[in-house]
Length: 268
Image (cartoon, rainbow, N blue to C red; front, side, top):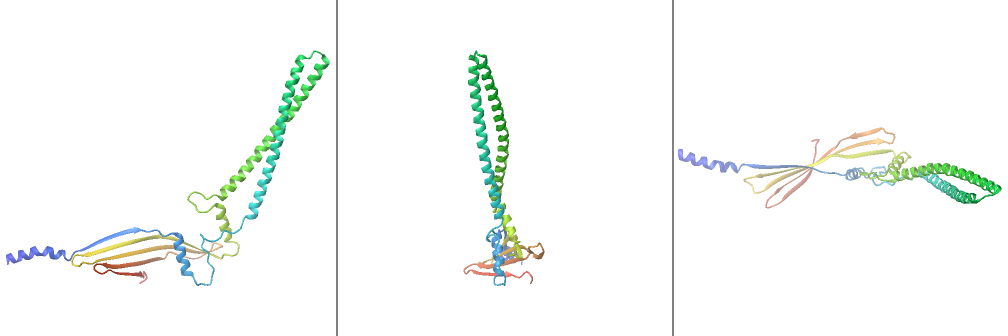
């Protein structure tokens, strides 16, 4: 019995290895875009007695046109005022330069004049030139201050318009577009807003191989978790939830490839 038992004991590990099952599991996150999630919801809603607009594709309402037009007219008027003030400043500066040249000339004549009456006339002319220079210099100072204020307002308007139309880094819409779309929700044409986002998505891959079989079994579970909220345009929440969907793909890899795809009923 001893030799027979020893021989049987030597055969036992190979026989047990035939019963071994190797299992490999891989889990990977997946990405489901907001547009894909919204499209799935629209597909489910198709055929119902309502009109639906996909937020990423709906046209931008023609709102704020009067305000923007008024702002543009104000900017154009300021630009015209700026040009008029600049012209007056330029004329005043030219007059100052002219009076400076006049005073230089009169100073030269006064240095050569010996007749008292002529000197008196030249001195009066110098005083008149000095008065005109001071007046024009005051004009330059006052108009330059006005010009700086007008220029500041024009720059501020241009910066504001540029900021309204610019798409911020990492964004997809300009502030003006966001405001117009939001205003469009309150013009009477839209009654409800359905917010949909993908909370989580991923796949779990399981592969099994039994030593005594040549075929390899595999299972792939794909799951998606969505979050939604149905809101009236006045802010009232009508419904909200966090549904989860799971699908399973299974099959065997061997001489013949058998594959099945089915939806998993989580309620059952």
